Image 1: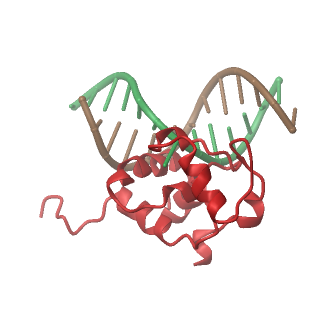
Image 2 (image 1 turned 90 degrees about the vertical axis):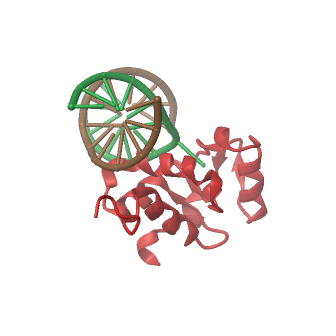
Length: 110
DNA sequence: TGGTTGACGTGGT
DNA sequence: GACCACGCCAACC
């Protein structure tokens, strides 16, 4: 079989993890990448999010290691990402997630 | 086939 | 604590 559709792409893996993020929690690209076994390829996670636009992926729950909404520019609304997170009880200082450490969720804990 | 990209992370200064 | 440079690896053109 040449590239059977049975094989799940790296993106699919990312989607599964992001979908498992509990409401009111957030995670980082590195945490997802590490969970997938590609800790050094944290960039790939963000790329997968770019493909997740067609899916129902809560990519707004994924931030960088400092809790900064680096991906907000890729949302249909720049403030949408912050709005969604604020709606879940998160607090921000500009684009920086204040209670990031408190709401951080590790995929390996699932 | 090869080179570039990319919503990051880590280490060093 | 902030800024700069390098590395990572899969997907895209």
